[in-house]
Length: 144
Image (cartoon, rainbow, N blue to C red):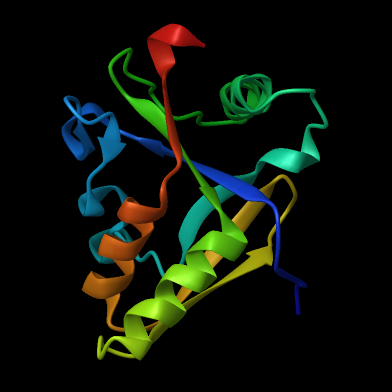
């Protein structure tokens, strides 16, 4: 069993159609599981793995890492990488539950670092909305 990651920052690539370009924020759709493709977890990357001085540099390293893999993602120039802090996500979910929201949680576990898996527990739509709201940065591919 892989270890749970409880702190740090993760990033996820978001295609152009899954970004609110005016607000420079990901839409909840950026965090949907593609069940038609058999996905059971959310694919993200742990930024601290790369050890660069800045967040943008770690996102750039993530992009380069993904490009080196067999069958790399096809990055669109208007796509971007959403960055989320794991502890902030957990706090936002807890606050939503306390305000009467649906029970939900997300757990991040090591896959093959820097790759991590996010597992949903509870209402997926609520989790997707909270993840989109929790993104503190979005770096467009054209700027990396």
